[in-house]
Structure formats: structure tokens, C-alpha cells
Length: 394
Image 1 (spheres, rainbow, N blue to C red):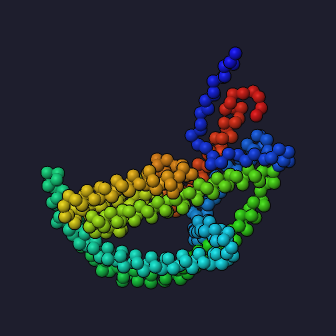
Image 2: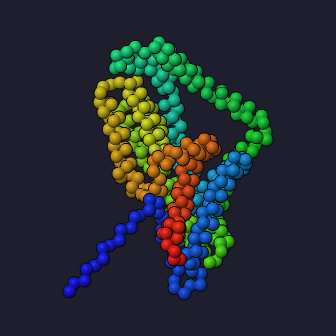
Image 3: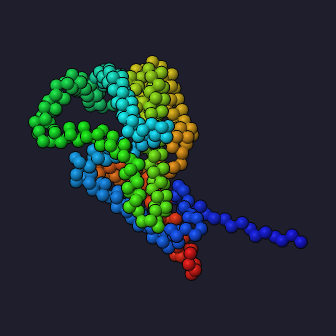
């Protein structure tokens, strides 16, 4: 007689999840933690992470002149540590690997500057004509499309903007010189700023060179019984942050090239600048694409050669968004960050309102860390008697 098998139990997967399951120590390991100890360790770790983020923002608000260079140096060391570690695995001494990376980075920055500065200078020189044509070409075209007459104030303000842009570009050099001179007049402030900027690469070099030693010293401070679990949590944060830093920069670079090439094919002025804005602006969902579309349409109106330009611009942004959503982001970033676009927008607005420009820069990394913390807290909560409604212990 065939015994009927019980129906499989369906488990509802949580919306938030940790990157890796909790490490299970081998049987008989004296450092093994029971559920109550592991829960306490995770809650303490979560509180320390939230407190550390609050401390970072507090230091940036109070001691920005000192905290910003240190934070930039630590960020650089964290971002480039995988490359130096890869060289170290190939047999290159870590000091030499760090030196090679800094030398290659310097050459890359100098080469990019030599190429991009003339390009942006030529693009900026087109701005006066860009705005002047807007008053004589764009406004009439918009009026013909809408079938209504725009107020004369629109044309007047656009023409005035073109004149101001021309004056601004002509006086950019003398104005910059006056700003530097007036800023240098405050010797202490000028010296502190210059010292802070010059110290960043030096600090980054030493942080990068001693990165494994610094991480080892931090790990040595962890309680011995909980070192495996806490180390696992830090690895989860590391994977989320690495995916964000490396992935978003890669995605932004790819999209910038794609948009710049497409807009150049459409023969739009400022194609490179619009492509960079739309590509790297994609780090805030919809913002970069929206601004890029508006600027590209305005560029088409100013350099109208036929409907084919609109078709090329539309195809460029459609292909870019499809490639970003279905190919680039899944392959480059994957699901390690796992922040919804709405969450990113809210985080940028909230952190920007609280901490200004620095808050905008740190909004998404801080949100990624808080996502891991919330995942850990929810995981532990789901194992409590309060959630299970059971009278038996874990």
C-alpha cells in the first residue's frame, strides 16, 4: 500500500534578505553561538553600524575640513584595494602594486584632462550661440507646434541669457584669477584647503598599502566567540558597497559613451557634455535620463536638420535604457545592492536635505549599509518567539 506523502509546506520568502546565510561552526566548536547569543551579537552589530554612520555624518558636519580628506582617502583605498590585491596574488609586492596603480591612475587622469579640457572648452564656446539661437529658432518652432504665441518675455529672457553666457565665457579667466587671489588672501583658509587636497592621495596611498593590516587589527578587536558571525556581516556590507561603487561607475561610463555616440550621430551640439550628464546622472534613477532627454531635445531644436534627428535621439535613449535595464546592470551590478529606484530617490532627497551635497554623495552607500542592517534585524526577528507565536525556545 502506498503511503501518501504530506503536502510540501510553503514558506514565504522575506522581502529583505542577507547576502549570505549565517555561518555554521563545525560540531563541537567551543566558539559556536546559540540562537540567543547570535541574536544579541547581530543586534549589537546593527546598532554599531547605525551609530558609525551617524558619527561619520556628524564629523563631516562639524570637522569637514579634516574629515572630508580622510573620508576621501579611505574611499579611494577601499575602491582600489581589489586591484592591488589582484596584483599581490600575481606575485607583486603590495607596496609596488600600490605604486604601479597610483602611477597608472596619474597617467590616466592627465591623459583624460588633456583630451577632455579642450573638448569642454570648445563645447562651452558654443553656449552663447546656443542660447541666442534659442531665442530666434526654438521659440518660433515651439509656437508653431503648440499653435499659440508665447509671451515676448520668453524670447527676451532667452536672448539676455545668451548675452550673459557670452560675457561670462569671455570673463571666465579673469574672474577665476580674482577668485583665486581673494581666496588666497585668507592665508590660513587657503593653506588648509590646499593641504587637505594634497593630503588625500598621500593618505590614500598609505591606507591602500596597509589595508590588510588595518582590517586585521579591526578583526583582532572583535570578541573571539562572535568573530565568525561579525566577520560574515562585514563581508555582506563589503559585497553590497563593492557592487555599488564598481557597478555604478561602470554603468555610468558605458551609458555616457553610448549616449555621447548616439547624440553625436544626431549632430547635436554639446553631445559629449549631455552624454556625460545623462550617463553618470543615472546613479539617481530617472534624473540623469530625464535631464539628458530635455537637453537633447533642446539641442535638436537648435540644430534642426530634419525629423531623423529626433528619431536618432529617441533610439539612443531607448536603446540605452533597455541595455541598462536588461543587460548592463544585471551583468555588472546584479542584485547585490538591491535598492529599489524609489528608495534611492527618497534617500538622495532625505540625505541631501539633512547634510547638503555631502549627503547626496553618501546617500546611496549609506542606504546600502542600512539595507544590510535591516536585513539582519528582520532575519533575527523572524526567529524570535514573538514572530513565531511559539512558547518553545529556539
